[in-house]
Length: 260
Image 1: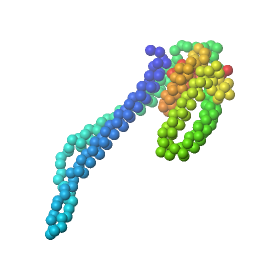
Image 2: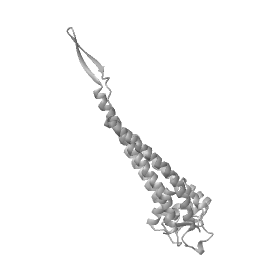
Image 3: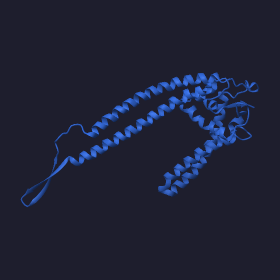
Image 4: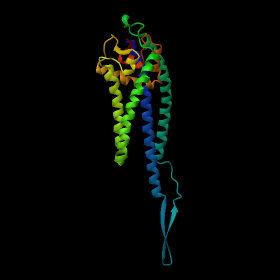
């Protein structure tokens, strides 16, 4: 198995494990809560007994609380089992968090070892952390202006559609996400090979052989940034110390950011 594959697995598997555990915890909590609510509703229908009392010619209704107690029922047993499952999942979650930090360390170890791919004509010409951060800020301003324009249009529409505002908000959010994706991949897979921010600071994105990215590779690089983010941004900080100035998303997608 290549060092790159080992490194990615060390980082991704513990994170996915934690996500599965948290999802299981949420589902179990929901089921237990639903059963508890059902139990309360059922018991409340039994708790009152209506006793008719005849006083002269008038009929009155007195509500008498059922004072009887019963041993642990089926719902109570389910609640206890659910609580025990949540405790077990919580314990597994702690282990998963520990494994995430161990996995990040091991992943960085394997990823920085590389697989023997060298590009002599690119050595010492990789885009460093601060230069790339500056490019990201420029791109961020451009994208923010786009968000503001789109948001202004949709806010005007929200005021006129009333009850359909929630649907339009979802549409706006989807458009923002799609727009961000298209912004990065169309620029980076074009002949320019760079976003406006990278072009402004004299950088471009290539594959490991210095060639232009395909649409698919640029898309993979974009979504790999999610992994760089959920590793407490260590995936981004790796740009500062890896040999080829690659972030985790660059290593996953097999890309380089080089100076022109």
